[in-house]
Length: 353
Image (cartoon, rainbow, N blue to C red; front, side):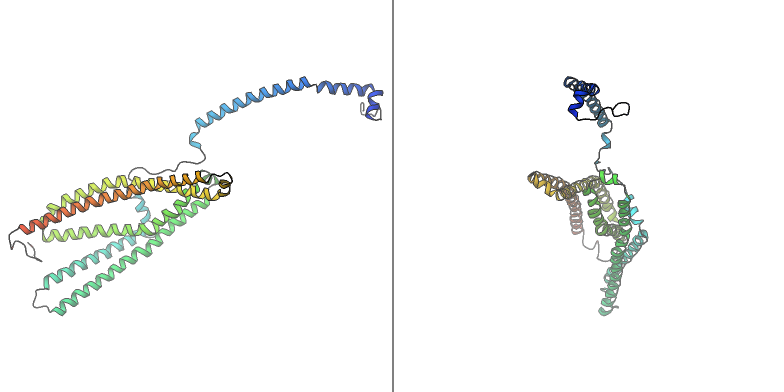
């Protein structure tokens, strides 16, 4: 071919012999594919590649140093210090929680008042000749049954509304998980999500309603009983005031450490669940590379790390219980000793001093 026209038509060997243009074309091709030139170009390309690789490596180091916080799997965050009543107020704000908490307080006050009236009736009329034994027992029993009705109402106000209060929180969690972007699942381990959905919601469903109601009822009962004691024996304040101050200080010291231990326990529990899920998902790969022992040892290590804060949390609870019981036993023993050493007739049962 020359200038778009066919100059010669023959085989390759005949063209090399008869056509000068074919000979020139073959020589030019041999020159362009000379081996030394190829080696030189390959050497130059290799040098250029090394320079580019060095630049890229340096940029990668700077990127890692400057964006260490932008890692793929983010460290789980946990609160530090006392969060106050904010979580409990948020819980009570779900599905008329304040109304149910108020009803629990009212029914408990009525129940405690019935108990006090029942004991007062028995103490005031047990030696009264104008009241027959039948009337004494009937009135005492009627007051007891009335108190039981309010006690049952208090229990129902804890169980059923507690379930309805936890449902909005569960719905909000599911909505947040379904609407979260894919980057959230790339940076959040599956075990952390499972820990929130399983253990945390189990605490909200089963423990939190009874804990809140118990706190309300125990506080009301303590103040009601203290008021009754102070009404009949005002000297009890001389002992009750220091005891209350000491108990509050012990509880504050306990809560400061207990909250941190519970948060650490929740964080380590998510690591156990995440490692278990990853081990189950990659069981075939683990067995193929014969790494069962390493993953088993890692699982035991994570379980030990999770058991440690649980044990210390239990130990802290026992520490507080022991000191409160020792304080109560000391006060009770001292009071019994003082009453025993008082002259006869100083106090009479069931009457005001």
